[in-house]
Image (cartoon, rainbow, N blue to C red; front, side):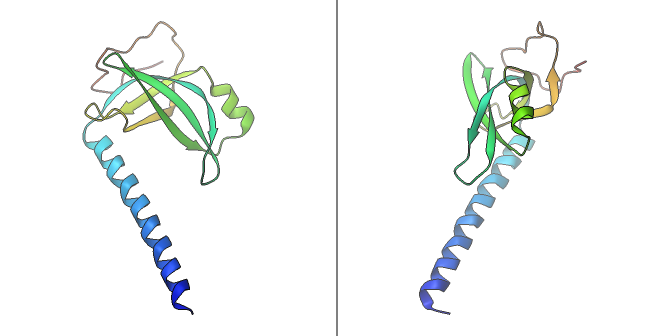
Length: 125
């Protein structure tokens, strides 16, 4: 194996390791310190590494934040989610660290989240 191939393989491993560590640290921050609020699915976007992600936004302390969640749902399933409301888990110190809970749909259109979010997952029917 040529030295340049080995360097390329090593470079890819380092980059993938960095991505993994970033995602791991982000997940840990969210697990240690989080609140819940309501987010709305706004659409879908293609990801540079392939696949698609669901785009959503939510409001915390009067500021609108956005997020994206990779998914392998079919196009018709994704389209059904647009404009639907779901629970979003976020880090109050870094609201850009967040995750939409697609298994927690908000059917009650009158339900509003507190400005600072909920400390515990609310009971939703």
